[in-house]
Length: 212
Image (tube, rainbow, N blue to C red; front, side):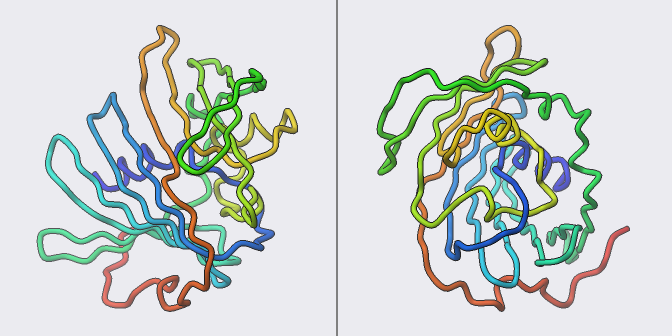
């Protein structure tokens, strides 16, 4: 179950090559309408790597897990607990399979519309794909660029289409729709907090059983 939730909530997270300059914490909210899932995400970006903590609510109940992206490691690692067990999963780069329909976002254009999104002055972008479209709002965030996200996610989701059209900014809020216009997924960045991140938070904790 945890791996399924990981895939659901990772689809549209921005990504590019390691070239990290930003350090701090992002807070996000995500809704997967088709699966009946909601997530609160805390994203730590530090010199030694990155970590995402997920608080999940589903039709089956609640749960939590963490994803670790150690710097210099092409794999990601997920820790999860349940039924008295502490499990560690290795997530290979093959998860970012370009054949995934949600990765087939190939054309982005700015509409010319602007609107405040939280404290961000955002620009609207329409992204068309083979399996639907995405309405995206991008904004310039001081100190934060797409170069501050894990290499594993390069080429996934909306960010690939934005880069292909040389559209600058970070996706602050987006909603994905199927070809019939039904909303499938919504995600937004609630806050960006620059600052030093304790390296101990970015290390995979001990005491977990590795699951192959």
